[in-house]
Amino acid sequence: MANYIAAHFDNIEAVRCPCGFAKRAFDLPENDAATVHVVEIRQDAKVHYHKAHTEIYLVLEGEGHLELDGQLVPVRPFSTVLIKPGCRHRAVGKLRIVNICIPPFDPADEWFD
Image 1 (cartoon, rainbow, N blue to C red):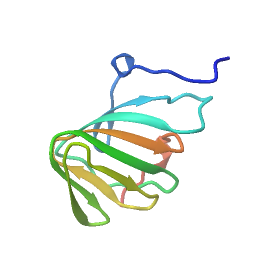
Image 2 (spheres, rainbow, N blue to C red):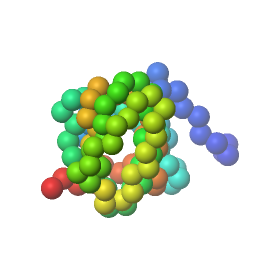
Image 3 (spheres, rainbow, N blue to C red):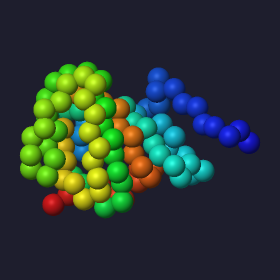
Image 4 (tube, helix red, strand yellow):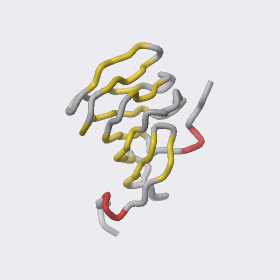
């Protein structure tokens, strides 16, 4: 077995998420390190939080804001934000981001008030 995992986002199907649509790389049972998502943010992103996940957002395209525990933080291409567990968050604006999720994304760790 190889000591690495490779993925190509063109081969990953997008799924609906609270922020819009996400393509999730490395979402595999044998991976316990992290997942990497490319997310197309929609205007109707929902405020949510994670109890176990840390997320790192890297904005690729667009300008807008991240709502983080009720505060609006402006973002533009190459802005990056580390979102700790428990931080209620959502993206505001039409954005394309990379989201690194540590540990790997688990849909059971999406919480809404």
